[in-house]
Image 1 (cartoon, rainbow, N blue to C red):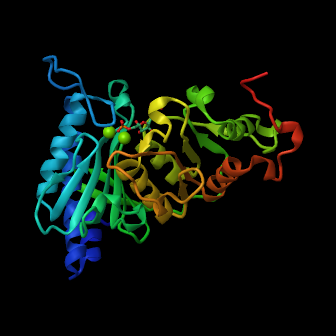
Image 2 (cartoon, rainbow, N blue to C red):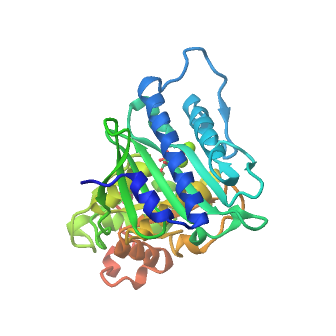
Image 3 (cartoon, protein in one colour):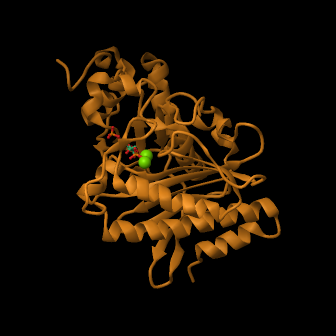
Length: 340
Ligand SMILES: O=P(O)(O)OC[C@H]1O[C@](O)(COP(=O)(O)O)[C@@H](O)[C@@H]1O
Ligand SMILES: [Mg+2]
Ligand SMILES: [Mg+2]
């Protein structure tokens, strides 16, 4: 018989007070995700009345659904022992229960640009210890739990409580999340990469070389064909990479807002990195393990590379010194499929 999220949370919590708080927080976030799924299915575009368009602290346009998702998850967070909450949709952290043991960081709705196309969107959360003056300035390695929920053809929760990665699917007949499978380790090697190639001209030379070598396929230094995917939804990219491996790259580039990367470290990259490491993959800022660094500000952006460990390490070698990579002969040194 398949096990439920609830059964996992109970087994994890035992009699330990902090673990009980973590389990309750995940439980409440799961209930909120099911509520949000209902809203997405019924009313993704929001009420017909025109609403003034706003931007969040990172400068992204807030859709009606971003704001509704934030409202749903904030209400859920109040039901758990959370001392303070940070959200993509709020400029400042929201203090909650004084003496609460947990700090919650959340991207209530990820992949917002996919809403009107009915492609996968999701939510991302991270739970940190609340102790100390600046709970959101801790390295990602301190996370106690992290999860993503993807609202796709299946509503799926990917969760780590720091001892492996679990995958659950929402079952309407059961009324909750049931375990789909024990996440198999992410394959170490891959021939599939994900990057928004429209940014090619903004990338550093080293990133271009890496992508050029993948695109050159069997005719290039990699000596084999590569496939490419880009869903513009981090949660959906994570689901794919957990299922069949792959590497995801969102490097820093020359555009003013993205000189430090596109993705926000606290509530996008860190929780995904924790999940990926717990599933046997690797996650870096391009070079260093991402979880070893701490965000300098609440909405700090970071370059982000994650997925199959060997490929993530290879990207790091390209970014450090591409000429040191064995298969790269001088012949391929400056070759580009995009440039003469
Ligand atoms: O539109 P781009 O530049 O390809 O960026 C896509 C990335 O932006 C994001 O949508 C950012 O998330 P938000 O929708 O929460 O702002 C990621 O999910 C995705 O990887
Ligand atoms: Mg996001
Ligand atoms: Mg978002």
